Every structure is written in structure tokens, then in C-alpha cells.
Length: 343
Image (cartoon, rainbow, N blue to C red; front, side):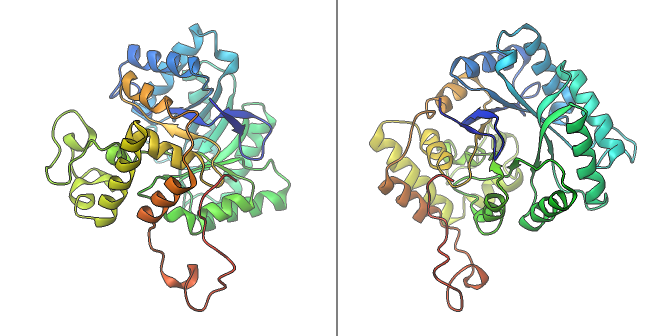
């Protein structure tokens, strides 16, 4: 396992994080604890959860594992708050009232007195941003969180938050958790540059495109059985009906498969290796249903693609930005698009 700093902070984390959204839902407690054990045995140290994962059960499961694990002091623990945790109008959002209660509840479920990284799970259009960021600063000063980060913010939202923090002299944000993979590269247009300019490390979620980049879905036969799209073919951005008709998706999957077959490794490992070496990446969040899936993902821990392999994937997955203002006639061609490599 390789390691990088958590954004511009001094904390060090593994280049692959363990996502826990499946805990208590698709993965039972015994299976979840087995994943946690295997992950730390492989050298991983960043565990990411959220208060809404299985209505708090994910944090409960992690808390019980932490209580019995000898790796407790080695783990960098991250959680998130923002989404509904109850039926009251105040049980949602990024107000001081909600975040204070949400953070305390997360700490209780996890059985700890602080978390290393606390992330706003998404933008809140209702709460004044100064109120939200003021809460994060107070939480840092109170020792309840070591660092703060964002998740699912757009470029302008990220920049607005960083500018306000700079004006107030508050503790700087260290990470952004976006959806990012070979099928979802649009964040490279503005979000990645904004993160780089402000020293935020990226913690990508859904690195395998909801399973599409593993090769498990056929383009010609609607999925069935115990998979996310088997249970709901129209599930979110991963929709089988939408992606199976998209030529770019077919081109990306074909390119990943060709590289995997040539190397004698899994398609998932190829997709993960491409992502971990993109600009500004701190740690890629793995989300496995089974121990076997996690083992396969962890096999990518020391894998890096060649320049030719990376170029092949870049070309197949190019989202094709509009000419203006991102490139093409009328723009300064010295500002070249991101082509790969580390931050």
C-alpha cells in the first residue's frame, strides 16, 4: 500500500480508502468486520462512513469493530453529515443545530471522542455558508474533529467556501469527496482545478462506475439477480437503460478490458489504477459488497499503468467538453486540459 498526505494537511493516509456504505445493508456485520480486518492487514488506514449509511448502522458496526481492534490508533476515521437523520424539519441540512446533533450522534455510534475528518455530505442551499463553516471551525477548536472536508460540491461552491474561510482565518478545508471514474470525468473541467488551487485532496467515490468498469454488466441483456442494477436497472447515474445505449461507455469498457486481458489482471484493478494517479487524488474510496470483491480491489494497491495504457483510457473516456469556455477556438491553448499524472 502506498501513502499520501490528506490534502494539504500533515496527516498521512493510504491511497485506497475503505468505503462502508454497504455495511448493515448489502454486507452483514460479520462480513463488514472481515472487510475491516482485511483492509488494515493490507496496510489501509482511511475508513470512510456517513451518518446516513443504513440509517447509522454503518457507524454502529464500525464502532463495535473499533472497540475490539488493535488497529484503532492507526485508523484515520472519516464521516459525514448533512442528510436527514429524523423526521423534524431541523433534522437535515448544515445548520449549526443539525450538524451539532449529527456529529455528536456519529461520535456516539463510533464510540470515539473525535473523528479525523468530518465532511459536509452535500451543499445546503438554505443555511448561510458562514454558519456552516463557523460550526466546522468550532468543532476543530473543541477537538471533536481534526480536519474538515466537503463532498458533492460544485466548483463555485467549493471556491466560495475556501474564500470565506481565508477571509475569516479559519482552519482550511483539506479534502473534497466527488464522484469520479472513467465514465464520470466532467469534474476535471472546473472542480479538479478548484480543488488543486486550494490545496484540497480528492477522495473519489464510485471509482468503478457502479460496477460498469468491472465488466459484470452486459450491454445486450438487462441485468438480474443480486447486483445493484439487477435489483433496479434504472438506479441513478448507473442506469443500465441509459449507459447500455451510450457508445462512449462501450468504448471505455472495451479499453479497460483490453488492458486487463493483456496484463492478466481484473478490469476493476485497471480502472482503479487509472484513477489513483489522476491529478489531486489523495485516496480512492473502495466500496465492496463481499470480501472477494475487496481482495480484488486491494490487488491494485501497488499497480500503476504505463503512459500508453493511460493515454488509451484517456482517449476512450474523454467526455468531450464543449469548445467554449473549456477549449477550442477562442480560448488560450496554452491552458491544456488535464492529461494524467499525480498532483
